[in-house]
Image (cartoon, rainbow, N blue to C red; front, side):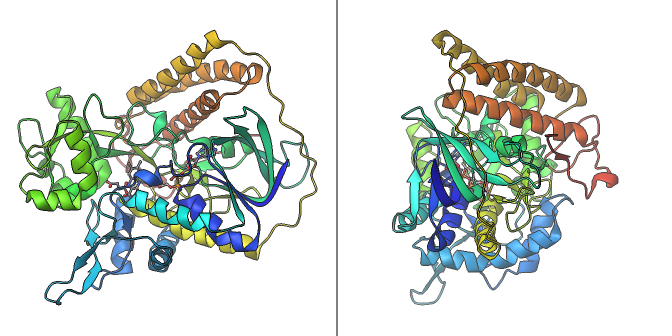
Length: 533
Ligand code: FAD
Ligand code: SIN
């Protein structure tokens, strides 16, 4: 058994920020299921929303966040996160993060942070590192973590399940004691025990057939927390990003909303601008509106995609501002300085998650959740662009402060070793990959941008059958990471459908043709699911 003071599951912005803050006070294990940089964070393009300019104010950022969230944000949480953002940004810069700068006009060479714009923001307020903000965040944080002797990193280790006092049969308040972790290289399951466990496992884009997310995003943290008895909320609010590159060879490549922020216009393949028919902010309307509009245009015309045109901007500006998007599109034969970019919506961000307060505390003692895995109330029914990196920064800091102030008393529980099934059968691997594909396709077809009760119920039935098969496998066969992730995407699929069926209205990202309007009775209500233990 490995014993630490702090067990951090995930090495994206949330996990690394928390680890760096608690490391001076105890031993930290960071468990991460692939290479240390592989995370949604690493692919973030647009940037981090924070109030840093004289023309902006906390009040405006709060107002934009509440408007995007369609009535469901927790205003106190929004105010806390928005107002603490600038201090956390300053710390990130101190750690070595390099944001893009620009020359202050008429200042004889003085420079200031360059601020981008994205949908739903009334001001330019997005700090960015060209179009590879996340890569720069990971570089800076991993570099800082490598200099911290109290942090030990376990790559290619996938957490299977949380260890809790209730699961072990102890009575009294449920308490998290650590996690069982599968070492992908040795194929052994190890026990990691810790007084404090942080879930920083990110989102669940891979539950859907088309997504902007990398392969790590299988909702493991939400599934583990749910199995452990924590409350999970608002999972119906899956954000579909309007502009994922449409190309047969491109896998999950995002075309940042910042491209529209700099003047890019959405058009049909015939070159007709269409967003003016849907929203006064046109191509820069909130994401739920834009994704639904694209979906509707594609259904109307039968086209496979729409296009995003920024060719009216000078080529030098495009290449300088969006070097990664320019080069990647060029590698697929699309010169974005000369031609419009084919785009489609794809699953992008999980607004719901494990219920926490703004300090990352869950209902289970010793278990914290920060970042995309958590549901703090910041995003409500639709996240404002670039607010997620901000939320992770602020809540990781607050969580770290909290765990030091309320350090749990040493635990005295006997933790048994992991018990695994013993069967292997290579032929059966095809069943695992078939079930993966089936879940992702049925979620895309039945639980996508536009929903109906009938489609949701159909999805619920299919998922229940699949869960039975997966359950059998899980207990009889030796675990593999594919099987562990399959079990998690099935659970998260069920949670998304379960929350969607609870909400008798359309709000933000949840659009149900059977209830096309918002229901005032649900304007302040979260859809919460909790497993009976
Ligand atoms: P992640 O960064 O996803 O990290 C999760 C970590 O957990 C990974 O290290 C993963 O390997 C690990 N992990 C997962 N499961 C397990 C397990 N079972 N065991 C062990 N380890 C596990 N947001 C913005 O605010 N601004 C942007 O510009 C922006 N652009 C984006 C662009 C793209 C293409 C994508 C996909 C997202 C973007 N987002 C953006 C969203 C944002 O990047 C994420 O919400 C944020 O990075 C999540 O950070 P995190 O630390 O919570 O999770
Ligand atoms: C983007 O660059 O469009 C992504 C921003 C975000 O998801 O917040």
